[in-house]
Amino acid sequence: MYKTLIVDDREIFLLELKRMHIWGEPSGFEITGKAGNGRQALDLLHETAYDLVITDIRMPIIDGLQLLHEIQNENLCPCVILLSEFSEFQYARQGIIYGAFDYLVKPAREKELIPLLKRIRKHLDTLPANKLSLSNGADTEEDFWAYPVSEEKMLIHYFKEKDTALITLFQNTLEQVYEALKDNLIKSDLMIKKLYHNIISAVYQEFTWLSYFIHIHYFEEIDYIHEGNTDSFQSFYIRKITYLLQFILKLDPPIHDNTLKDIITYILENPEADLKLKVLASRFFINNTYLSNTFFTKTGIHFNDYITVIKMSRAEYLFKYSDQKIYEISYQLGYKDINYFSKQFKKIYGFSPTEYRNNEIRDYQI
Image (cartoon, rainbow, N blue to C red):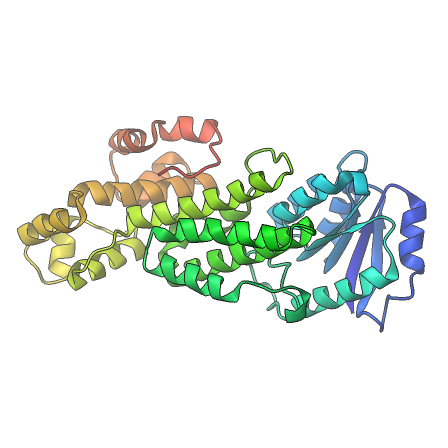
C-alpha cells in the first residue's frame, strides 16, 4: 500500500477524505497521516516516508504552495495533489509549475479521485527506489490527452544537434498545446510540464557532463512571481530551455574536428583535472602549438580562456551546492593562488567568490 498524508486546516475536509470508499484495496493507497497546516505536515514528512501528499492550498502558518515548495526542495515525497477552491484557480496553476502532480477543486469527490489515484499509482510503480529525478506528474494513460510525442522527439533531436531552431519549435509547440486545450488550462499546464521535464531529462542523459556544472533541479526552481496567466508559464519554460541550449553551446561548441571533440569531451567530464595545454596535447598525442592554434580557429576562443570558463563554471556549481571554503575550491580546481582564482572568477561573473555567495545568486550565469 502507498502511504498518503492529507493536509487541511479544516477538520471536516479531512474527515470527508477519510470516509471515502477508495482507500485500501480499491486504490492501493491508505491514509496514514493527517496534518492541520503545512508546518505540521513538514514535521511528519521529516519523521515518516509518504508516497502521496494531498493538501489544501490556503492554510495558516505554511500554506499549500509553500509546503509543495519545501517538499520539492528536500525531496520529501514523490507526489503532491493540491486541493483548491475554484477562486484559487490561478494558485493551482502555479502549483503545477512548482511540481504538483495535479489539482482537484474542493470538495474532492470519489469519481475524480479514483482515476487520479490510478494515474499516481502507475507513476509510482515505475519509480526505482531512491531515484532522484525531475518530477513527471503528467505521466498518464495515452487516452488522457493527445500528447505531442513527435514534437518531443524532434526537440530532443534539435538539442543533441545544438540547433538553435529548437527555441522556435518549442515555442510553437507550447502555443499549439494551449490552443488545443484552451478549455482546460490545468491539463495544458500538465502536458507542457511533462514535455519540458522529458526534454530536460533527455538532454542530461545525452550531455552527461552537465551535472558537473548545473544541478538538474535548477530547472525546477521557481525564481520569479507568476501572474498565473498562460504567457507567464510559457515564458518560464522558454527561458529555461533557452538558457540550457546557450549553456551547452558555450561549453560544448559545435565543431567538426573529431580530435578537438574528444579533447573538449575530456575537459567537460574532468573539470577538476590538470587541463594545461601541454598536458592535454601530450595526452592526445598532438603538438602544443597545433592544439592552441586549431582550438582557436575551430571554436573562436583561445584555449586558456576556454579552460578558465570551464574551471569557473565548475567553481560556480561548487559555490552553490557545497559547503567547501573558497580556498578549498580554489585548490581543488588547480589554483594555488587564491587571489588569482578570485580575480578570474570575478572577471567572468562580476562578483568575487565571497560576494557571489553573500548575494545568494540563484541563476547560473552565461
